[in-house]
Picture 1 (cartoon, rainbow, N blue to C red):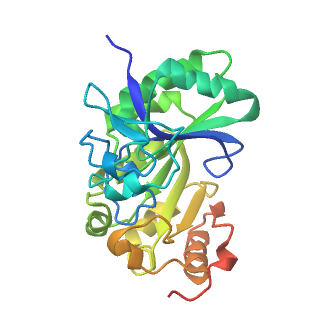
Picture 2 (picture 1 turned 180 degrees about the vertical axis):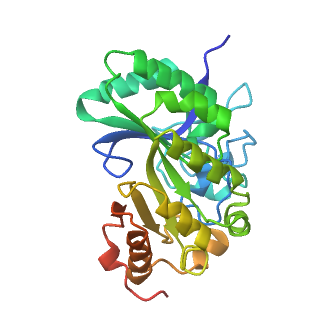
Length: 296
């Protein structure tokens, strides 16, 4: 059987915001949600090699090879992102395909400088066979076995798949886009039954590394929080890591570009709700004090 490979949008060899410590972050291409507020909409789809972007590249960094595959020349690319703006599939031709051994080599080269890795996206779990094989190799390699492993996820993964993945990771950072199904579907295009089931499974397995709420004033349903959300929050351990991410416009396209950004008052109000529910480990944006400018 062929070894799985992955389509990867980007690798950050150093990050201090994608989990504790210094981390290497792998951004996988492709997502199973279609969030209107996505800050990286070009990571949703995977290139279908239609070639429509090729004539628009001012640096001629894109071409079609003999197999009908769009090829990207990173040395010629100026990162103008014209290809992203013309793509109708929310995809990017600027991706690379990695084998398990190739990605393991990247991690091993950076091991002296990092405390762990984070698998992100897009949605990393849409390439589950690869991440299972990669994490297994990572855990069995003496040079990388001590690194902590986190997954940043939207929670759509099924129960059986989580059962395969959770023994290989130290934890999962779970994004809550909205609490009620109708609101979640309006924002993301999908219901959130699986997200709530994933939350229960992660809590039960003690693998919930962080619970993340994206606060969008007048759009998400966290302010004020519904009673069943409060009930869930009060059942968490007081030390459960919670992160409030305030919506801003960078990278957002379409209707959501006109949604109001989260202000410091919005974030502080929700933070107080979480504190009142007994949650003590609540993180807010470090620049909250600079987010109080009026929305224009």
